[in-house]
Image 1 (spheres, rainbow, N blue to C red):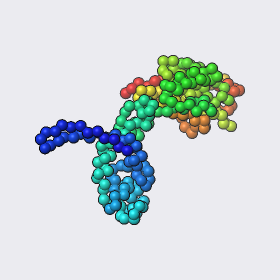
Image 2 (spheres, rainbow, N blue to C red; image 1 turned 135 degrees about the horizontal axis):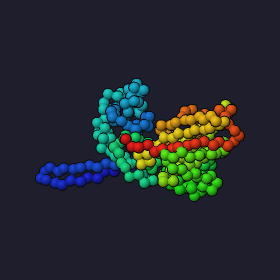
Image 3 (cartoon, one colour; image 1 turned 90 degrees about the horizontal axis):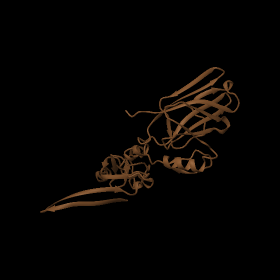
Image 4 (cartoon, rainbow, N blue to C red; image 1 turned 120 degrees about the vertical axis):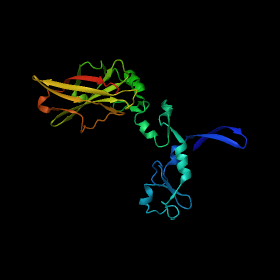
Amino acid sequence: MVGASFSGEGNGSSRKRQLSTTLLDPDSLHCPICFELLTIPIFQCDNGHLACSSCCPKLRNKCPACALPIGHIRCRAMETVLESVFVPCRNAKLGCTKNFSYGNELAHEKECAFSLCSCPVQDCNYAASYEHLYVHYKCNHGQICPLNLFSAGISFTAKMNISDKISMQTEYRMRLLFAVQCFREPYGVYVTVNCIAPSAPEVGEFSYHLSYTVDGHTMTYEAPKMKMVLEVSFQTPKEKFMLIPDSSLRGDVLEMKLCIRKLKKE
């Protein structure tokens, strides 16, 4: 459903009107065939049935509703509607107040600071904004799963049991959760570090340096840009990890040096 409000003032026979349109039901402007967002150009058959430009060739330019030709006549009225509609962020109920011209909201939602982040504790179904997630973890899991404090830009010791699979870290000045994860495989242990937060300007970006020393030999891994995730994965990573060979492990305890830095805005 589309809501509209009019404003204007009369002047003789002419009357200027300004139309402000907000989309209340985003599904109403989806292609009725593929159910994807309608984009310009939009086509119609002689009976007024719509199809997006991607569907017309797949339909061999034959309307699935009435079998009339489709793909040659533009639906200018619907194209005008698309250009005038503004869509609220899907995280509006969580506090986001931004509206976007139709079709441009997806780019924002990828970096919306109010995006839902899932609790990293397995079997916990809590999800909220990254700030609320921090409070939830600290209050509900902090005693069982300690939250280790660090200072950005300063190297610290990250010690964990490989069998625990995950260790949570937090910068004491930022309400952010950082997950240090290890994945044991027959030939060694994969180690990754991720920030549980959206890729939002309000959050910022991070890099990290990870090192592991055994018998006087040190192996290092440098990530110029840390991965931002809304939910941690417990699947062995295929990229962006440090591999510690099985021959370099000493029992179940893994003791590493980690330095997380906040990148400066360009």
